[in-house]
Image 1 (cartoon, rainbow, N blue to C red):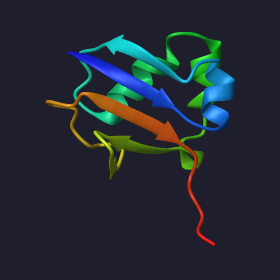
Image 2: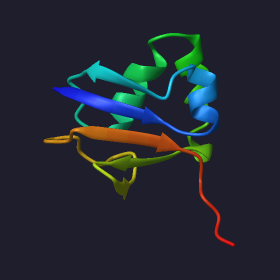
Image 3: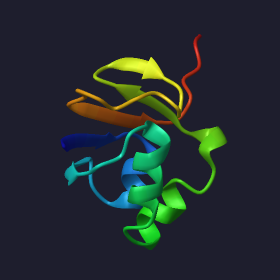
Length: 83
């Protein structure tokens, strides 16, 4: 499947781009992260501490074990705070 992967805030800065199109066979978000982290040092650094990263699949917040079946977009961003 082909996914549009979006990066926000410091993830975008570490990876060096706001989005990329990825061809993947990942079944879950966790699998996709493993694939992305293996791409290069920038991705590996961005995903080195998943406690500092949140994720959305097709604009819905999900956990790392969420399936990617039928997904078109995955976004990664730091935790948000209210105020």
